[in-house]
Image 1 (cartoon, helix red, strand yellow):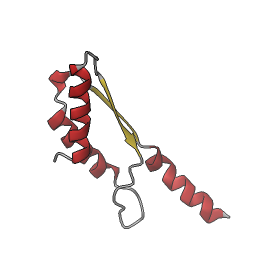
Image 2 (cartoon, rainbow, N blue to C red):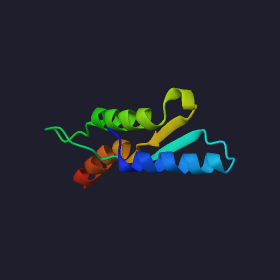
Image 3 (tube, rainbow, N blue to C red):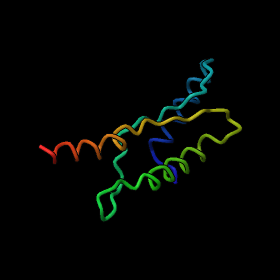
Length: 87
C-alpha cells in the first residue's frame, strides 16, 4: 500500500538529493490514532504494518534511509483517558 503522503516524501527526497543534499532520515511524524479494539485499546500493530508497507515500497533498504516515527498520541492517549475518568 502506497499512500499519497509516502509519495510526497519520496518526491521531496528526490528533489533534495537532486539539489545535492544527502537525505538519510525520514521522520513520518506522529499522531497515530488508528483503530480501536472492543476494549478501547489502539491497535498499533495495524498502523505500523500500513506505515511499514508504504515506506518499504518507496524507501527500500538499499536507499539507506533511516525511518523514525513519533507515536506519542498512542502512548499518551490511554493515560489521558484514565486521568480524565478519575476526576
